[in-house]
Amino acid sequence: MRRRTAVDRIAKTIAPTGGKVDPIDRWGRRRFAYEIARQHEGYYVVVRFQAEPSVQAELDHTLKLADEVIRHKVLLLPDKALEKAKPTTSPASAEA
Image 1 (cartoon, one colour):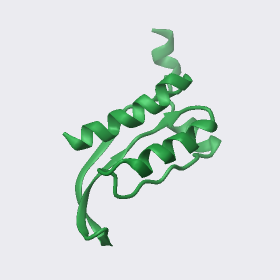
Image 2 (cartoon, one colour):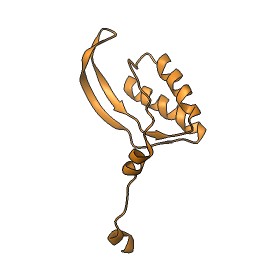
Image 3 (tube, helix red, strand yellow):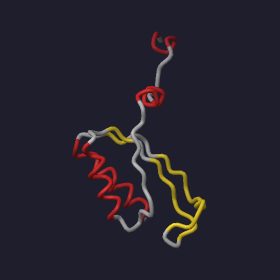
């Protein structure tokens, strides 16, 4: 329940700015490489989104205040990685 709340909070931060949340990749419960805040394991979630750069500061602030989030990281993907992530259609399927 708390996990879903944290992920919903991320989406609610991004959506009003005209951003787009891609499908969420839930990795599940995993053991940490080292203890963080007296915790040995946590639930990993990868949220890819497209938004204006100003959203990053607001998202960082929101996640820092969220008690259910132990650690977070917001990364900017290079343009090449974004192109690879986009679904492409093959010429054969485009003609059909």
